[in-house]
Length: 476
Image 1 (cartoon, rainbow, N blue to C red):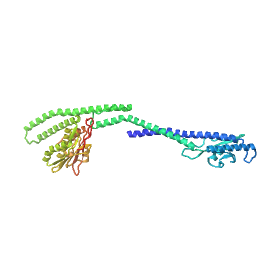
Image 2 (image 1 turned 180 degrees about the horizontal axis):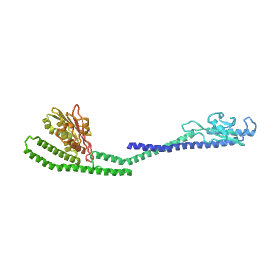
Image 3 (image 1 turned 90 degrees about the vertical axis):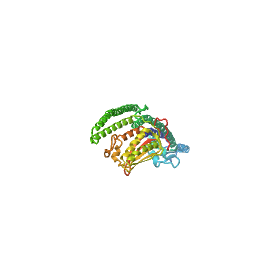
Image 4 (image 1 turned 120 degrees about the horizontal axis):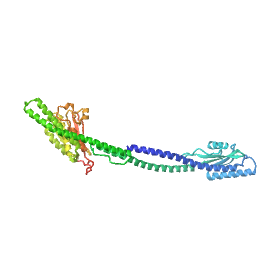
């Protein structure tokens, strides 16, 4: 979410800065050009005042007129030599009164347009904007008016190199300011997104903790907007209510299982007494006895499940290989009785686990593997490690499970329809999963080809949160 919100804020801030910077740059360019235009208008006005009384054609005699024309020509030449600006005064028929340099004439292009506009008694006020990337000139024309008529036109054509340089320098200053503002905006966006999303990150972490079985986790006060703080308080209230409901459910299961054991024990005792008065091979009493024992086993498993979900794990560094080898040795007699070969590859591998919970989980998994494996087949127990997780993989060559059954294996009281006649309550794997999950472990199931089931018991090799030794274990 941070990676999505931060670019959005940066794009919005960049758009605001561009919306402010572009008009400012355009305004700066316009101001620089307007300054040059005003200066040229002043110059053309001065030349127009000098040319106002030089109104005769070039071949007209008269010392006074010639002196004024010479004075005008000298001014224009000096103006061109000092500033490099072409200038000229032209009669209405394009004939030059005076001009510098000599080849400067109003023949075409912008010079011609400005000349014709001035003939209409309009002075140049708003030439087209010149931009830094252009190599053009700035033309300004002013009419010479005598007795209310336009008798000549003063035209100047200025190079724009210096003006474009000043515009570019101004733009660089604006760009530097925009870059500095953008950096400040990015810093502000980082702080803002961090402030807004900090409660979300805390909420996400707490939700993950609760989802993985740490129901005591709660969202700590982490600042942020009032709405998110209110959401955190609501989440804590919801978590408290859910925990209370689960505690009541667990207490009910434990109490019900415990309270039913006494009358069930008395009932089984009466059944045994009744069996003494009936023939020894009576099928009905044998069936009742078997169902009673099965019910007693279900109650014991329910009580174990309630305790597994309620009690905190006793996590410590355990040699997984040693525990697995011990359980293989314990179940070997049962496997031999069924003519099933139980083998184990159990190298020393350390991990964090509750030894009792791990042993119980391995008992349930190995028991199922031996129980459902036909005579003459093999059950393999393999211990391995990938650095972060230690695994115990139990592989059998039994009938296996279908894809639909794989999605349900481990559910409470669930048993495959093909195995209903085999002893069991359907709670063993559920209890194992609850015991492992309390310590950060897990159970997973997959097919074993060509037939059978592969069950993987996984436990973490890194110290869980809150342990004194938070360092990961080294490979053994």
